[in-house]
Length: 393
Figure 1: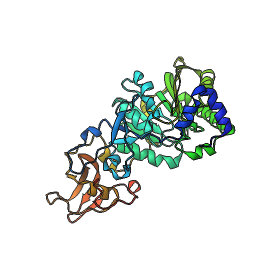
Figure 2: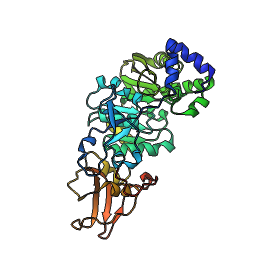
Figure 3: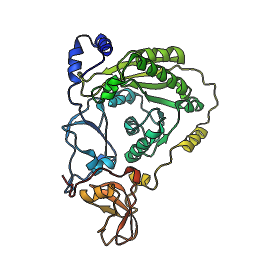
Figure 4: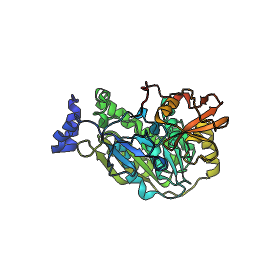
């Protein structure tokens, strides 16, 4: 791997005699890891004749319901992937759980500030209590679609998806108990997976990223409660975007570090490069007049409209006894996910809305009109990849 000379010099200063092992790891294959949905994955009927199990290997040590895989399957051809039974996520970023778990309590209000495509949001909502609220925000409009899809498929009801600049949240004064900020960065930790990140690396880009990170933090700081927590992470190693920015936050915004930067290097763990830390906002007297009900109403007003009626079909709270459920085989499930019309519905089913299920997990709705079932799967979610006939193994 052809790395910039200056990157080599700087990273050697961080790693010392571990440089050779780090450099060798960059030429190794990236591990594949998944996080299981604790409220959907247990529903899978593994005795389904054409069920194909995930090639689970060993647990990810720092996250619950998370596993490395023995190999990388074609996730697109697994209906249970589309049903939100699991999320494919880089293992290092799952370290979020270790930082936040000691501080979990009922009725938390959490902001995932840079949320797309949804890995940390689906992780967070799996850890939070049902009476907590997660606001999953993405600034870049083009990335909101994937965030909305992944959060909807995960199926938890107490999450709002928004598309706002971080500064927008400053009007919600001292509202959030926790802000999770996985910030845009220079991407040094992604060199193994993304060759473009190597080509884009420069000291100038590091400075631009560090300055952008400061602006983002300053813009949303007012929305964090006194004594509230900030989980700050990047997928980069350098000090400017990590320690230096944490010090800047402490001195300029008012905070203290309660978990110093933890760096994940690919030669030390099974995962990509990552850095994560936690700060606590200074405990200041509350001299504001905030109405939580009004704030929640305003947040609901700016949420990205959910896809209807499919949101209810994907929810972990769906009552699947209120409608007929058509349990289909793998091949029919994949045709459904391609948004094809379906035929040969059981004659006992009456006309109208019907739930489609594969291996005991709901995939979505069809409308039974007797001779065929009109497909109501969201068009923007459909499988575009060619699916071979009789794709059962």
